[in-house]
Image 1 (cartoon, rainbow, N blue to C red):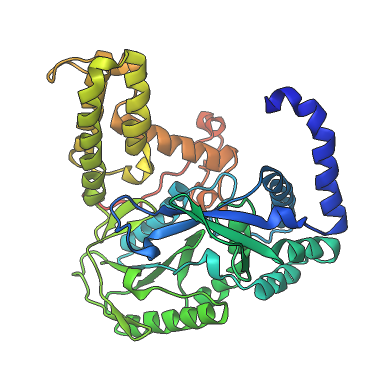
Image 2 (spheres, helix red, strand yellow):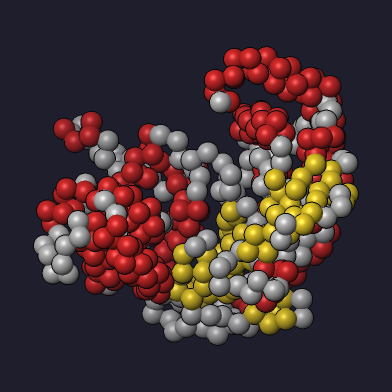
Length: 446
């Protein structure tokens, strides 16, 4: 219906959008939100309020206005090189997979240089909801946003209100004096700009870092014989905590995780890091942007955590398979199971085949389920019919695709830095083949 009447509505919507941009004013009705609490994970306790994410439902027109501003602001930041290159959240050609690739490649490079590394996964409490509006506006001004544009953002943040809907009841409107709304178009980009100055604090201690929205990953590599590593890490975390307090953000020590990746052939080191009167002890595994990382970078725990829910999903789909067509079964399997196998599978490149064999067994079982065949049916013709590459080939394809984008297409700058064109010492027939220099960052046992 909206597509049918769009020629009649577009002139009025355009007038409203342009009027807001030229006047630097956001209508009050656009700043009203209805908050619906959503449980972060199904396994969490629903009686604990902290386990809910307050998602704001905004009007359709307000989201159109935010999208227009978001596009213009993104273009301005890109043209003036104001983006943080190590922030992968909510940016074109960036994803959780590219962010994890950047982190794991740094860890592999450190291990190849016989250095031990520490990976710290910082966790913030209610990060989006505690953004200070005055500090955010000051940050925007420091980035060169002034005049009517700055007035528009001031109007966007001022006078916001929300109502909470829970179990069919709606609360009275409440004024929103801090934070950027979760569920809005502009909120994530504004939050990334709000934390823009954090990179200077981290870099001043000689740490590498990578961010995805409010998830911050710290990487610190050091010789295994360095006895000052623990003190340097604690000093960095103290400065980060002070920066967070000055910006009304709060680190959550109970959810901050620490991984120690030892340098070969040094044994695993036991570092105890203090943060806000709490001790952070190293763990063998940690969940990072949906991927379970281990302190040896073998990813065997990740494969296990992927296969268990996949088997459960296949079991449930098999129960209703007699009532489904082949096409419907394929859609279910691809959306629920195969998508899990493909998520961040480029991190598994170079691993032994016995590590990824459980993933191949999942794919084989999924192919038999689509065609409703018995357990020991041959799967090669089934995979060809479904146009599914085997798991090892899917990993290789993803790696090649990312390398191609890093060399020729849109890709994050940190991935482009990993791709080095091969230069021949003299004129050869292979010069025109656009070959790359293969990296040698994997361990010998790989």
